[in-house]
Amino acid sequence: MDDCIFCKIIEGEIPSRKVYEDDDVIAILDISQVTKGHTLVISKEHVRNILDYSDEMAARVFSKVPKIARAVKQFDPDCKGLNVLMNNEEIAGQTVFHSHIHLLPRYSESDGFG
Ligand code: 5GP
Ligand code: ZN
Image (tube, rainbow, N blue to C red; front, side, top):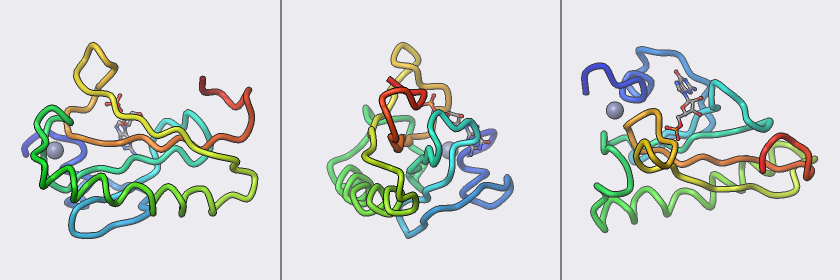
């Protein structure tokens, strides 16, 4: 879709630090790291957010999250766990209107999130 940052990242028109990719999703490091290793799992299909997901799309996208979360955790031996969250619509904090799931690695209670 024109003028969508994440579509441009998927197409390789904007550089990103890729963590994982398959036919359904791309996972990249967030440009603004809330915690170290903050990763976005972005659907390859341009859908605004969870409110526009079909059951079939939900199955394709969300089924990938556990293995990407495990990979992100295993990347850093200091990572003790992760928050998984999704902002849907402006009121909920969504700023990029192409669906994505945040993985926030956690290291301590004072690591910058929560
Ligand atoms: P939202 O607020 O919509 O849930 O999350 C959007 C996220 O996209 C933000 O955390 C923001 O830092 C990230 N972001 C925005 N533009 C870019 C970009 O060009 N590259 C990367 N890697 N992340 C981006
Ligand atoms: Zn898009």
